[in-house]
Length: 519
Ligand code: HXC
Image (spheres, rainbow, N blue to C red):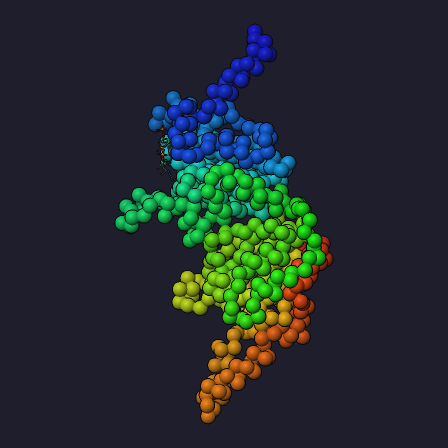
């Protein structure tokens, strides 16, 4: 029996905890701060509601014994795990501690992460992973690799059940990048975050190519070129704020509805500015972002992947306080054509919204799929198919508004009636056709144009005839592909009413294991 009093035992406990909470020690902490980075626990404190974090598994120890590991003490095994709240809602968090052996991931480090993931799944609360690590702990060999495998497995099990958010606040290299890639959203910080499967040295050794770590895997690279990053912040503090903002649009799990936000902006506000923003001339570009911002609740638009595939816009917003996922063509970039990257970006967003009961609002002004050998050889067929699949599969309320062009396969891909749109609205400027007049007339009237006395005059006449026939929403409305032709100023009102009506829509799954999503 212990001769110590309970108070003495508590004092010992506090001492031991204080030792462990120092992480990798003064020198390593100083190095972390000098690199402009916060420590694992400082990050969590800034991310969650003040005083809400409960750390677990502080006493975990590794059990490796090779390469001098038996003698090494690694506080908390290099990762801080636990739960807290954000705006009062429960979240589970892990935060790798770079001051402890470079935040490298060994067997017990991984076990801490998988334990917290299992808890998040059981509770039905988001998981947030803060990554800052040299990757697999080399000394632990296959046990480290197995640890990653177990995390990947749980990322996949959790996909579509709880939101998963990855913050990259340091290096994230090798196979370690795949846990964030399996999650829903990746946040990076300019100048600080790096993600690559093989770093610059390996690239140089294997291919001779010289490239900096920043150009290969920095935040800007992944936000603009690869599309790996969804959000970029200039500081860690800003990054945590952005995570909190994102969570304000998301339910905690797939059986909850998204939180209803402030609805001080009247749902029946008229959109008179739209008459100025959108030109009726089909070839005159405009900024679709202005349209989105005018339609949704003031200041509520949170754009996702804003610098990647800018020909399509995706993001969360609210109408009458109710969360809605917006997908919109952007005539400012590539005339709003759909291409490989746009299809990838939109499809993933549509699927996320469908997983988490977020209705979809699709704004259409699309001249078609982008032509060219780059696109064809890059597989626009299989990438474009993702959009058709994602919209067809989605069972959340789907409201579509056609503003101007809606041509061919791209018309279908932008949540047409035939892909299951619940309500299709069109402005009087809508043009719904198999293709634009120029291409169409040269195909269907080739002989007439060739035989005509003056080919140019004949072609002009036929172009005008085609435009009269198809450059309006009425043929589609007569067939019921468009439900209502509306005054653009009433778009917000019409969408708000549609969201209200279709909110209770329920569609049963098809009883199959899962479909074969094109990739
Ligand atoms: C063991 C590691 C480590 C690792 C870093 N450390 N990475 N220990 N395994 N993977 C240790 C260092 O030895 C050092 O220990 C401490 O962490 C800090 O590292 P430094 O090198 O001093 O820091 P810095 O100069 O900032 O450089 C950070 C770094 C570098 C760029 C991350 O450490 C690095 O290149 N590490 C190796 C990265 C890597 O190749 N990892 C394997 C990737 S493959 P001391 O004791 O000196 O403080 C992979 C496969 C995953 O992860 C597969 C999943 C399927």
